[in-house]
Amino acid sequence: MSAGHDHSGHHHHDHAPKLDHLNAAFIWGIILNSAFVVIEVVAGLYTHSLSLLTDAGHNLSDVASLALALLAFKLTKVNANDNYTYGYKRSTIIVSFFNAVILFVAVGFIIYEAIMRFMHTETVAGGTMAWVAFIGIGINAFTAWLFVKDKDTDLNVKGAYLHMAVDAIVSFGVVISGLVIYFTKLYWIDSAVSLIIAIVILRGTWSLLKDSLRLEMDGVPKAMELEKIKAELMKCKGIIDVHHMHVWALSTTENALTAHLVINSELLPTFNSIKKDLRHRLQHMDINHATFEPEIEEEDCKQLNCD
Image 1 (cartoon, one colour):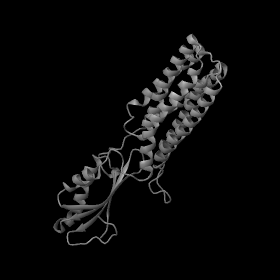
Image 2 (cartoon, one colour; image 1 turned 180 degrees about the vertical axis):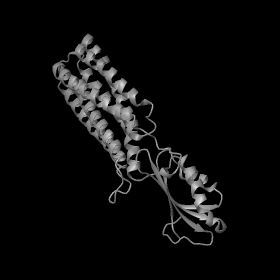
Image 3 (cartoon, helix red, strand yellow; image 1 turned 180 degrees about the horizontal axis):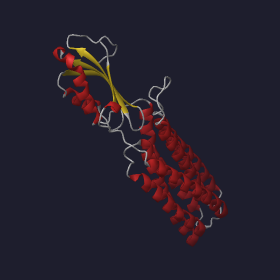
C-alpha cells in the first residue's frame, strides 16, 4: 500500500521559525567581536595578561562560531537537488556541534596556559587589563541582546547567545581581577581567573554539545516526547494505532516524522482528509515534514522491527 507524504510548505500554517532578521545580528556580532579580539590581543601582549589573551582566544572562537552559524543559515536557503533531497538544512546541526567542539578545544588550551602561568608568574598591568575587559562587557552584552529574543527557537541562535552572555560574565571577572591585581599586586590571580573562565565556558558549552550531538545522531529533539506525539495522532478520527514511528531533526529549526498508521478500513477512502488532520496536529507540535504509511486493521505489518 502506498505511503502518503506531506510537507509543511503545502499547508497554510507554517510553524518553522523565520530567522532571516538575524542576519544583521550575526554580522554585527562578527564585526564587533573581531575588533575586540584585536584590542584584547594587543592589550594582552602589552600587559602580559593571560586572562586577556585567553579571553581573546575564546572571543576568536566566538567569531568563527558566528560566521559558521551565519553560513549554515545561508545554506538552508539553497534548494534541494538530486544529491541532497532535503537541501543543506542539516548544516545547521553540523555547525552547532562543531561550535561546541571548538569551545572545548579552547578550554583545554586555557587550562594548560593557566597551569603553566601558575608555575611561572609574570607581572601584569592590572589597570589596563581592567579597562580593556570593561569594554568587552559592553560589546558582549550588546551582542547577546541581539540574540536574546530568538534564543529558544534555534540551537545555533542559543549557542550564539550563550557564547556572548558567557563572554560578558567572563569580561566582568577579568575587570575584577584586574582591579585586585592593580591594588594588591597578587599576580597569580590572573591565572586563577583564567581557570574560572575555563569552568564557566565548560558549563555553558556542555548542554550545547549534548543537544547538538543528539540531533547529529538523529535522536528525538529534546523538547519532544514520542508518547505525546503518538497520543495526539491517535486523537484523529479513524486512527486505531500508530507504530514504527520515528522523529528526528532535519535542521536546528525543522523536524520530521515517519509512522505506520493502522486505519479503520471503512475510512481508508478518506485517507487524504485524515492526512490533513494529522499534518495540522503535527504542525502545532513543531513537526514540519511527515510521511505516513497506512495499514488496515486486518493487515499484518511485514516490516522488520515494526512496533
